[in-house]
Image (cartoon, rainbow, N blue to C red; front, side, top):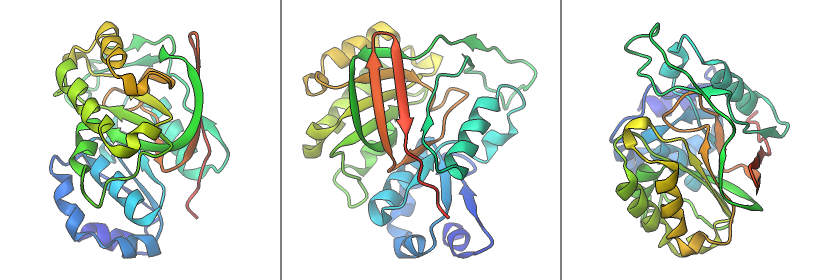
Length: 264
């Protein structure tokens, strides 16, 4: 398996997935997690790679990264935030903040690099106020749900749950996927929720998201922030799965502070 070869090779310092891989979860039964545990290194990807991110953390305890694919580095414009966050996450052991980008784009950049539309962003959206700390667990919501009931699902106890979904999602599917996750026994100990910005084709408005969150009594006591810079809308932050974080949401002010854990 290429994944095993990459972890085994001492000359490979980091592994970037090329793209999500719709059936990435098919790999899980064939992964040598003992090999990965014995050869810790940067592993980064997003979307369907959530299955690998979560499983690696659950089976090895190693922090890995929800962040850009290798293909993401082909973006010509508006990539500065993504690149800076990635470098900060994988090379720096000081705490870092997931600050809002100044603008965002949902363009299919890979079709036409010269025809891009960037929209100004004025911070994140506070859906519920509060302050909490915990372990960052999450990624693509519908992919994470594929791990329920398996040996690869990480615990949500004391989790800062970060979730996002792509343009195949809409308000009803996001609602029921989130509810499914909240039925897990340890979901009662989720400390905060971070929701990535939705793609425009999902048609999930702020009003719709507020209604969804208001219907989740399990979450009524914790801080929730939406439109956070991760997921399928550029630019995106690199989030270390398994790292400790503090979340503060007061009025329109937010702070997402991550304790870095560099892999030597």
